[in-house]
Length: 414
Image 1 (cartoon, rainbow, N blue to C red):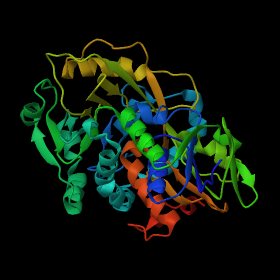
Image 2 (image 1 turned 180 degrees about the vertical axis):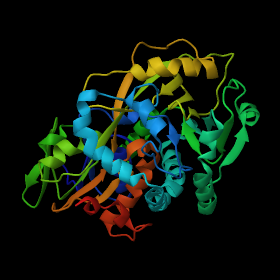
Image 3 (image 1 turned 90 degrees about the vertical axis):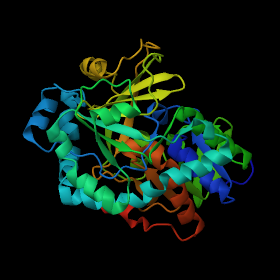
């Protein structure tokens, strides 16, 4: 096979975007995955490119919220009891990172990535012929109580300081944007600059196709086959071994399995999430994503119908699906919006790879020459895929990065 400069392991939205950005910098790249581009964790997302996001997710801040999770009374979170001893250390680190001052610091470190995320997607969509999937009409978050809305004050202040447009409105204001919503909520925020996709899988595949036109190759292979070969790296594929001086690990929730083979242990946790697809109800149109914040679910129109995504579930990554959150959220959803019938029996399950400080790891792998990491994008893989690819491309090609990458270095955990 022809010369290969870089092996990229993982063909989700992050890995595919990285491969494309490297190919745009005239590198010969092999993108390797056991599945086709975009068909695993990246497939099940909400379709929102969250350029307007400011604050990261937080550990429950009061006893009532924590008790509701503990007693499994809400739809925003679920857990497997036997998994708690294993996830407890991660949760304690997550709780420490959820202190207000730390969260604000995280927001400021993450902001340069989010601020450029939409523009980077739009550039890749334009050259990939995928702009037909892009919606530029923002998204809405609903708050059912005055107390929940009042808790947004610091986030809204920070959004204004950082130049992120967010509009606040009452139920009537939100229903002017989405008349099919029923007035079971009291407040809403509208992020007009946010964009969303009607088919995230199609966009990832378009990026992969563009990558191929630039000379990149997409191969089926098992990332666990990666090993040292001389001064570089070798991975086994269905078409034979591939050798390259550099490798990028963009394996999402499967990254720890591979990295452990090379003595790299980072505190990645998994927030499992589910989605179901429903038929579009013509008499109840929906034009943009809507989040019911307290109940922890999102509804969004897509080409294949209405997608409903759940909050988080703490369970072993590979454990059998337990989609009980749908049992809890459906009465709340029915009160808010007239959803159509199920479009398929399948309930999709994926695992969001999360570090406790809500920042991805982007940069060199500690102690491994020629290995780069792009992992732990949590709820924002779709959002940050292209801009992660740009940042890594700049670092690997010797360009001056558009931001100081030290805030995303793996060494912060070592």
